[in-house]
Image (cartoon, rainbow, N blue to C red; front, side):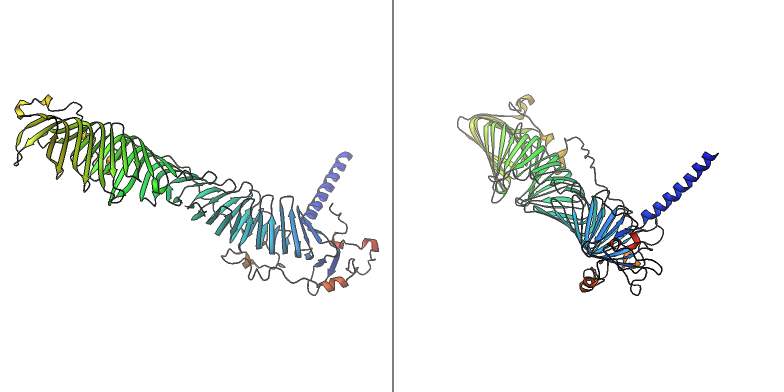
Length: 610
């Protein structure tokens, strides 16, 4: 029984002592070489000032040093003046000319050349709010953050200490030796230099300009990812797409879904659903329903292939297409396995089972070359190498046919005007009179042939050298004899519209883009619903209205009034004794001289911090 009573008393004393200790911990402690009282001007306060060492405050993991201070012990509040330094552990250091701190709410305010530093970045501003309970700092009078790679400026900013994250709003500017980033809203993580932006943003450098309305940028690694209305402007190209990736170190960019690459010098456009751009090599690779569009004599030429590559400087661009090439123009179309276009010379080479349709004519061969006049941008000539074959469908359903080893053609007003066939030429031609009646079917061998066109029809055939021909009445030439060897009519493959470029392609399902979600709406920094009582002490320089969100400075005339006048002039301080100036209460003996040192009676019984 006695043991139980002792344990009970011990428990009571323990909790009473613990409660007293907890209350003690909530009170601000301080050290000061000089302590004064001025009840007339500062009722209920101690006036603290420096002699050799600054005034020193301690409260629950935060320490503050200043030249002068007013401390309201009962209200657990102080104001600090001159060369203020505030430290929280080894993570945050802040200096300013003025600061105040409410120990009950752990809410601080600083002004006058405020400079806050963490391990990775520093912040400079005129006025700063610091909520230790939320572990957040906030400014809205303009701030400058210096990172290892960049300088960040904004009019409004918020720092989350636990996440090492800055949230910027309004007039955000990041300046790097290689670029300048401007945004309306941006999150920046100081531990790794990652920036996420959520509004209209531009990144400008000597080599490019990037625009996006949502994206990510690694300010230290110089790589970015952009996902809304994004585009990259180079000196002579514009890259657009649903999703863009950019690497400044390698001058490389890639794009996914609904891509458009514009050549601003040559007035051409390439579209597709995946692209890569190598700026130093001046090249573009594009696939997934890729199509290149170039304007010629006010008529666009479309080239589609599984894969397109554009290389070379603007004055000597080369377009290459691979696998399933389709060519379309209002008066011409074609197909081949691959294609090579050199814009400087106007030469287009169709390689691998090429076929071309010009007006009513089908041309095939092992290789087809088209030559464009680079000045007038009109079709000039064509060449068909090896196994050249030309077919024109007759009105009765038959086929006029011309073949030879090689074929050379000339265009006039973008239509075939003359075709020459050389070496081992053969023709099969439906002869008609002026009334259009069929006279017979002519089969002729010759060493060379010249064919002339008028109104898109063969008007005359001129046989040269070693002519051997027979005109057969229609009834005397069997159907199986009405085609020449190598005949291959491919009219069902002809492209009649831009849409036909993709008629043989499988359906394409765009890649699902992993977007960047908008951040959650932030709680008002000054929200005090979770606390008992107001954030501000009634002795604060601020008023409750100063804690309302606003689009102007945090405190009226913050720049001019950032540092209040000193409590005491220097000559007044020099005239005071270097000891505690508090008079003892009646009946109390003065402390011995050796004890009347730098410690105020308010903390005389508390040990100094090592």
